[in-house]
Image (cartoon, rainbow, N blue to C red; front, side, top):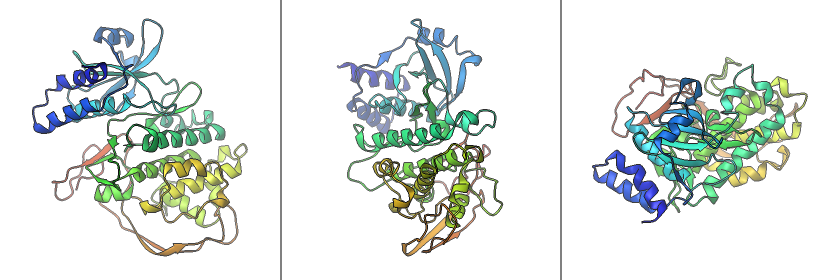
Length: 404
């Protein structure tokens, strides 16, 4: 048995899958071979590296358990993700993340260094010095370190990372949980996409897959939330939300700058249609930002978050767009979000790029909004999942989107 196959069998064996489905998952994982440089860490090594998982070393909470900073005996700094003892869902996410990241290598995707499965299940990653984007972007005391150039570089880097996952990796990978807290920044401010616990392999030749809903409110595409239809365009939508958050410094899910707008997307589109798109930019960045770059990124963010997923660009198109001026890009239609409905009545045309005063864009599309019991806003700390057999609406005490 080769080393890479042994890697996955070692991870799966302690979980004791007893169902046919579990046996199928084990066989599938064994078939999807990992790169052979994966390292097996002893439990004692990782305990010593993290000072027995000392609270002072805790970096945050990952998809299936806490994450700790560690330092190996050779001085190398690492991040160690620890599987929660009480999470059955976490077990699946642990295997999923190990399976996918073992085959992924890209400058803008976090690197998996190795694993430990006994007596506890641990994954070891490269340590990313500046932690997650949300800890800097949404705090007034730290956001100043993110000048416009750094924000633009983050947008470009995340776009390239997603392009790799969608089109250049061994298999097409849909992340499903792109958001500010899952983008890590290294010592050179290079962004790295992290937390692949909910990622899905995308079958070649299919337009979409139907799956249970898993993600974070405010970042999930409407067709995915409403119907469970998952495609690469769901990641494109999430990316668009992050782009608009980076430009504005505002969170989408608890937006409160305009009482007439229930979220950041609606507000950004409103300003854009009034020819005031550049007002979306966080005020502290205005003196140093490149207006052409800002205008292009605003338009890209709106194009990526359009209600109709077929109108959203692919990530290869997004990367190309980032090298162009806003005036050369097509006009965005209405953004989509939970509770929104869009009825197309034709094509969209415009006589203005929405970035300055003058003639407003004219659209032959209509957009109506409905409200749900939960609304559209929820804490970024909580994720949403829906089973296909549940009925009615049940309020979740942990602040997640209500199950249907």
